[in-house]
Length: 557
Image 1 (cartoon, rainbow, N blue to C red):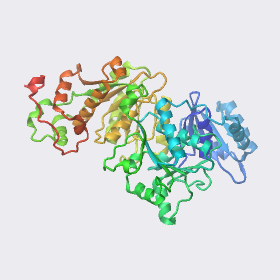
Image 2 (cartoon, rainbow, N blue to C red; image 1 turned 90 degrees about the vertical axis):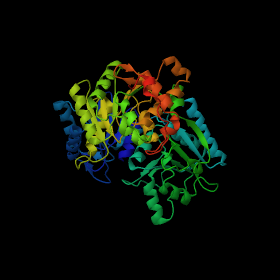
Image 3 (cartoon, helix red, strand yellow; image 1 turned 120 degrees about the vertical axis):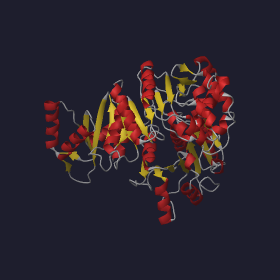
Image 4 (cartoon, helix red, strand yellow; image 1 turned 90 degrees about the horizontal axis):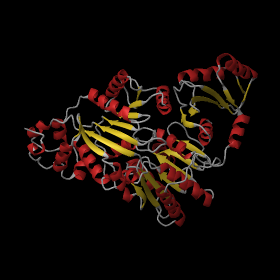
């Protein structure tokens, strides 16, 4: 019922609808925003009986924990008169506008909703091509699998949801299974589909936290590990699915997915249609996605999306202040590991914050994510930023710090505060890589070394989403890895051929304390001969040219 109420709110006028109900949730089930107010909803499902005053006490407690403005009790039952009296007293004495959504109110809210949500816009041209490609291939029943590759921010989930909506208009009783590799992504996927699906389409979740009515639901959103465990015990799937979708399909080469694909026969002539969705098709273990998905239905990478204006303008500043050029003479081997250890000075948090504060002053309505390498580093950055007092910073992480994890309440409040603008900046560790969208972020700071091209592109994509009033995203890259410089040079080379970026000016700059460092860029271009090869290099690969004489570039003595 929590998810049904959340879907009703998502389909309607509410923003940032967030399901928070779980162990340790403090009594809250849903958070949402409307008219600059935070709503906290406590859902009460009853097979019999009435809702009494204890529900009011609980939702008021949740209101305090989640810093909410408007509390709501949503129930399929009825409330007794004591609850009505308490509601009236709360408004008269404290100005608290307690909402009571009992069964009749929920039914009225549902009936007032239009069949399709008003939040859905018309597809962009490349999205329409992808949608029609999926629908056409499914109906043609020839090639039984396909892959959609759309960079972060280009709407791959919308494409899949709209394709499903159109397929279900043409094919009755079409059952669909949507798979993801984590429990959290399953919830995020279902929530992302809600506005696109008409209000009568039934969905359910099947993951490590719950199992919905997978036999009756038209669309099931499931965690692959839960499905694999069920198959292992029962040796069958609970339904004959017509269409199976794998989100974040770069994971499809894993052992669990491979076994599921083989078992279910999906993607073959006699099996269901298999659709893969990914923003980043590269895999570190070199599994070939072409062996899983027969055809590429659509591909728009991050460079094309930026060049054509589907993603925000980028002002990318790669900082080379921390390179100790003289140490190049000490190198005995030219591998990324040796270069990174020899060249880079790693501790310079204060200088990073100086540059961040400068960027903060030059962009309207600044909102930022700082990607940090470790949790203790994120706390250090948050404290230092808050001491400068140019914005309020928060922190979010997925791991354990001093034996403790972020509680469900802390995480939900932090994300809501960031969405609502109560926090202007987030220091993040291992969050915002997949599944979390914050469209109005317009400053990204990279302090995390990642050797994964996929993670780098996903993190960069968090700032590239277009939103109203957003002119560009400023990227401050302080990552001490020679492969990142190769990636920057390659990206600049590709964007420099775009007419849009020719008009906008230099999108990627190599910077030092005084400003743009063209000599350093010239040196790096000459030295990093095969940038594509270097960008993908392993720690100990000998892929670099021997550097030219530094004196030719004014970088040595």
